[in-house]
Length: 403
Image 1 (cartoon, rainbow, N blue to C red):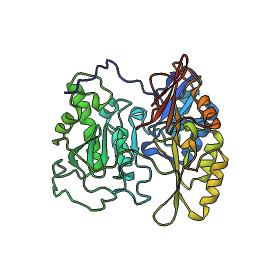
Image 2 (image 1 turned 120 degrees about the horizontal axis):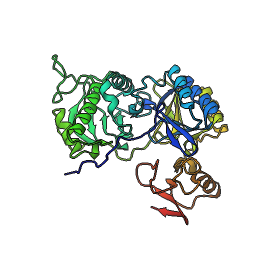
Image 3 (image 1 turned 90 degrees about the vertical axis):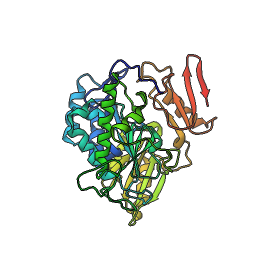
Image 4 (image 1 turned 30 degrees about the vertical axis):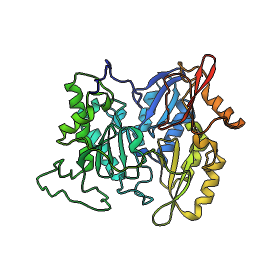
């Protein structure tokens, strides 16, 4: 039996309103459900970073964006700008809008379902329920369209195709009637309403019910767990509250690989361009290039890449040239496709080195280690990618290689 969490305080994950006091100033995290960011929203973030803090935007391992080095009180101006741009729909729920989704869902034909409408419905339902503001800032929902990219990323609740996941474990709870429809549509057959055994009519409602069940189970265990897996028998007990059971085997692919760097054909003719953002730092020039390149929106992924979807195929070459000139990486063979780092010095007071500068020097000089490599400033291992990787761990005596 898994022991309950010993945490005795709520988490202090930063948000766009509740910022974190870092060594270099205020740190604000802007949630982007499903990673989707309208081009005009990126322009707002770009201007806010330049005016209020560090001009470079940080991409996170959950597909969100951070603004660093905010001056005292600048978070109020930032929140006002985000709200006006539609990037802050709820002051009370903004830290709990942690939703990762398959970045190319509904575009490249590789998934079983189009999860984009589910992301929007789940986000709206989350913000509309006052009780769900109590979710921890680290609680995560993953919406995988069945291709197996985001299910392995450690969500507390999630969907894999039509199956509910709890802390990564599949359950007997299924959904039917996806807004975009399954490849093989099914019907619930229960006009009186959804029942877990026969499937839920609305996948977003199933996820919302799972989030409420987490809060109820957490309260019954008398703890302040941040994640479902921290509860005693968390997945099984939350499943039981949904009249379901934890199942075995979902037939999904392991690994959690993101979209391939470069061009991906979309249905109907356009292409999606996936570019690497070196070390997850989006400069002012790069942000401007993405705004200019995007026909409507960009998608920030959990792998520190950005997808520019819906690019007409006859414009793809020019768009690639524009993004490459700004320092974004379109070559999948580039070492930048496998190098990540935490914030390090000077932004983090706990870091023992300027890991980003050292990572850049290592790439410029030729890497001595197999990819992927994650550079970290201390034992906390912030921002570490999922799966096997080499760690360059800063210590008082230099770097220690951990593989």
